[in-house]
Amino acid sequence: EPEVTQTPSHQVTQMGQEVILRCVPISNHLYFYWYRQILGQKVEFLVSFYNNEISEKSEIFDDQFSVERPDGSNFTLKIRSTKLEDSAMYFCASEAAGAESNQPQHFGDGTRLSIL
Amino acid sequence: SQQGEEDPQALSIQEGENATMNCSYKTSINNLQWYRQNSGRGLVHLILIRSNEREKHSGRLRVTLDTSKKSSSLLITASRAADTASYFCATDHSGGGADGLTFGKGTHLIIQP
Picture (cartoon, rainbow over the protein chains, first blue to last red):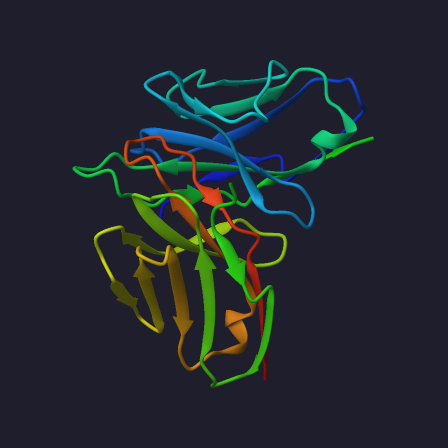
């Protein structure tokens, strides 16, 4: 069964440094998402992406964050200047476009981001 | 407002018993989805129920949705040790594509062998 893959599985970065998290969505999917989960807390929506542009973003997704789909397969999340509170598990998800909007989102195993 | 709040927060049962988890939400939804998360892993989609559906089955899973009470339940029958995981409900309240899901805090289910 096709799956969403994320790299790296664990990223350790100094505060203030830029970090790029990478995702390869399922190949025929058209909607892409980033979520984060701070340790012990709920999964939170960050941003959705469709047709090469941001479709929706949450309050968390401020100017420090950006997303890109640089080619036909990768989907990246960049954090420009990391803060301690950015430490979390970051999940990528993708979704097929169907005849109706009720399609499940498929998640990767996540990247654990640790800011020192 | 909070969406997708599950209860109980933790549930421990014996293998073979049924496990029921509940989810409540506050604003109207297009659909509600249940996910499982094993420790340190990603979210695995279990089942999606649309706002115009009342019940849905998938193998040992049964999901109900009551839009008048803004609540849903997930029943796992004949539980197995491998069902030990955290279970989350997530609501899609927009109805279009590329909608961010709103997750609850989850129920941590432990199946005692």
